[in-house]
Length: 364
Image (cartoon, rainbow, N blue to C red; front, side, top):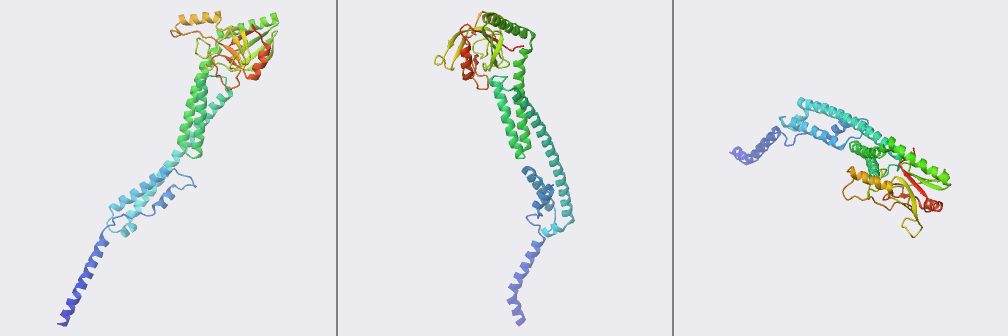
């Protein structure tokens, strides 16, 4: 009887112990709800660490995701607890496969890095070479659009340098290629503007004008002016001999021949000074008014109309001057010839009303 009573007293306690033991057994046999993943960070660093090279953040995260995916997928089919997972041959094989995948991924990262380095260096070298050529030409091309293309090219290359300094070679190469595209626009404008200077008919005509002007200077023992548009230069001759030359700036239309009002091109032809305007009589410091358009200009204008080169209602224009406010380093006028104010003062003292002025594309 006492034994029976003891059993009744201990029964609930034993029941609780048996239930706890059963729960522990069940827990030991159930797979972990969170698959065990070894030191992924260390695996990533080991896979990507080669001679201390910096690796793109995107590549690092991509590899990390691949390693985690491999571990999780393998753990999902592994029976038993996480302890069984850590010691299984299946886990070892999974790690080996992941390590091999990481190695191949690293090789791909290296290959891509080499491609980016080669692409960046090629684009950089090409852009630098073209900008060097453009800078050597200086402001001789003229025209606001061409100058804008050159400035855009320089800005794009500057951005490319900044990307490269940050190790971002892909956007650096793209910015350098953009610089090259701007420079190709600049070169196209250069070629178009300069093709007429190689035309034999143009060169003969310009040479004849200059020869006749210098002959007149010698014959009349007088001062004459010759403007070379391509060289951006105004030359002063006295009795057929050059006495001084000034840097000049032209119309913002560039080196094209003037056809009509509003084209912002400097005309070409044989003119003369019709009026001298001192300080206070012009907003451009001082000015020498020319007789554009003359009879030859009007004849060329009518011929262009007959050929259909001018829009209906086009006018020939006028008010062409040699004036001050130059020295800006680019062609900016409406078609006039601009000198720095100091040079304009010297020129103003050398000429008089009626002084011949010959403007040519270039002096052959």
